Structure formats: C-alpha cells, structure tokens
Image (cartoon, rainbow, N blue to C red):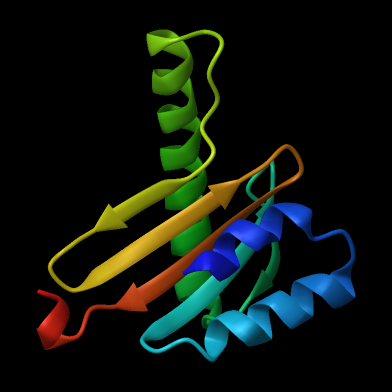
Length: 111
C-alpha cells in the first residue's frame, strides 16, 4: 500500500481524486476517507452512515495516537497508523492539513 504514503504530497482536489481512484484499484480496498484536521469529511467512497462513523472514530483515534507519540517523545510525530482486526485492516496517513484512511478487507489467505 505504497499509495497511501504518496498522499502526503497531494496538493489539489484533482490529485485527491486521482489518488482515490488508484487506491480503489488495489485488491481488497473497501473504502477511502479523506478528512481535514478537524475531522470533517472532504471525500469518501463509503456510504454516508459508514463515512460518518468511520471519520469520527478515526479522527479521535489519530488524535489520541498523536498525543501518545508526543508523550513518549516530544520531538516525534505520528506519521502513519495501521490497525489490523480479524476482518479488516485500516491504514491512516495524517499530515498537517489532511487525514486519509484506507480500509481493506482481509482475505482468508492474509489471516
């Protein structure tokens, strides 16, 4: 999932749309959510209800995770967060202006 790291260089909405399209071509990608630093959704490929729930929870998680990183080392910053559950993997790339999350479904061979 190298694509998610390239998001930190995205500068225009055209670039955002192209990045989303590239990510969606990746096997097992369920959805992509892009939000601003306040957690407001900019773009999402998920339905409205899932987008609202996902963006709220991931924004809170990233805020807490960034706080933990800073508490452990004040000179450090959160640059990437990866969660893996029994069913899904969630990758989050926060930067100073945006937060992008990619949700994938784990296939049986990944477990």
